[in-house]
Length: 275
Image (cartoon, rainbow, N blue to C red; front, side, top):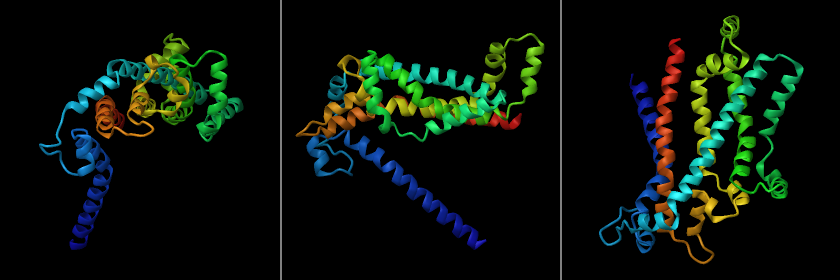
């Protein structure tokens, strides 16, 4: 009994240490977002005192980021990209699972192999091609997100769909459903748990992405929040107080989305286990 208690205490201490390590950057960002630039340099880890506490960072960061416009750009690009990725990937994975041929196996292998190709290896030729066809704009950015995000999504859907009984689809076809209706009315509702997971992965990746928008977006009115954040880091100076305030503002929507979606994941998994 003593050994079990000791082991439990040690695991609890380890878990607490890991949690502190992961939460430390968040603590530093939030705490220092309420300090003046001088206050950050004087005491980075301490709480903001009366002499260095300020809310002006958030007001100024809100203005400098042109927050409403850049937030809307990020929201539209992320939402549209994720919805299209979910729709196309789920349909493609379903068709690959239900079509047992050598060609379907080769196609699935190609999607899996595409994940091994680093973005840095194709970014320059890709940007050059997009420039030639006049696609250096938000629609072009969405198009590329769909391409880069579909491989992992298809693989995740593929594994989940294998566990869905084919008899459900056959029964729907006997009742007169078309292939399109079978998927959207019968199969897709059963994919809710994995759909939420795919949504979270793609939303967090697209929302926080900096490199691809930097290469594609060439007009200030189209810039997303990560691109606007770069405004605070100049060649000779870094506005850490404003940058951290802007970072917190940019984190709030994605953190809220994550916690809301997390509830649906737990609910969906629980429903699946009961069934």
